[in-house]
Image (cartoon, rainbow, N blue to C red; front, side, top):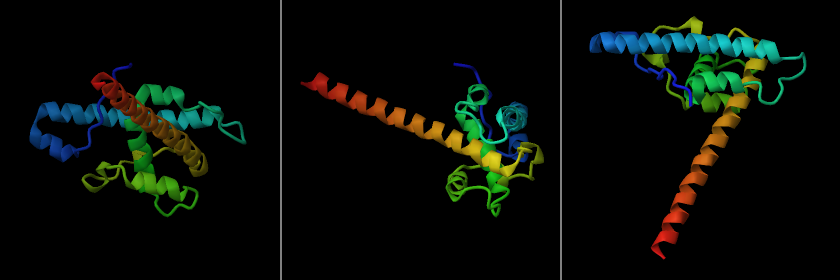
Length: 154
């Protein structure tokens, strides 16, 4: 698995109070967030054929940044355009559950994905599918561990 920059959720001001090491973590996360937003935009426009986005189009960006950062960046976008009707209600509810620095920091326009909102909504759908699959895998792993544990007791 690729080593990724950890997502940093505190504001710059909070990081500055904690010292230089925390500021470095903030800056690395900030740069990764900006890169993630830019790569999402590039991916959407590269793969969109005028009608649809093909299955798996999001995989390279997901591999590069991971589900946590992509979810963060996408939720940040939705949280800053809550009244846009081109974003599905399901995606708005999903985004509302993700903590962003929105309440602790100034608006970061560089985190916004400069792509058609309808295409962004399609991208978010694909990422949510990955998230659901990952959660299902975790439940399956937990269930298998429990079953295995029961077998050991017999």
